Amino acid sequence: MSHHAYAVIGGHETNDSIVRVLVSTRPKYEYADQDLFNKKYSVFTIDDAREVKAVHLTRPVILCGLKIFILEMDNITIEAQNALLKLLEEPAEYARFFLIIPSLSLLLPTVISRLSIIDTEINKNIISIDEDILIEARKFIEIKPAKRLEMVKQIVDKITKEKIPKHYMADLLDAIQYSIYKEKGIKDNESTFRTIEISRKYMNDRSPSLKMLMEYVAVNI
Image (cartoon, rainbow, N blue to C red; front, side, top):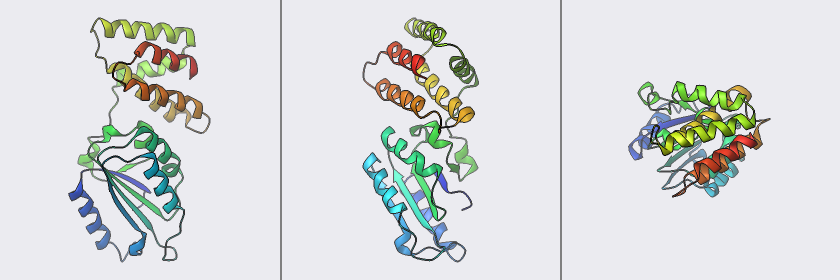
């Protein structure tokens, strides 16, 4: 457990497997039973994230021991992911996190970037951003707002004419967020990430205005 946080695709059986591994490695990694936080969620919410944060602040029972979190979830809200970001970025030295989820596509790129994938087979399921979309995202970031607005109009026109799928805009938004995180980090770009998350939240509505949402991103990042 050299890394502080892991993502594992799976469910209850995966949870059991992780517990068995922890038990088998107990002579090497010390932790008390009460320092094993193992919960299952149909939807992991911001309230759940706050509970994890609160438990995280309490030191392990065993001096220099570990506090282990196994969080098995069928889904997770964007708000909860944002609440976990800081914790996953700067956890206590004694904390280890295992996020068990059915698909890594449920997680934001910024969250995935803080997680280590345990199995090489699972690693194949990480969100992969198409290189062409990454190129478009970098271009979007680098050009001036007026040019971004033109770019948004062109993309919306292509979607309207069914030259590209509707999910292209969401993929582009993911690529923009990923590129900014990788190249500039979060500390000096918190307002930018808030802008992107607001747009992503409304993009999941039943009939979102993709043009309006991406124009909002274009003038605010």
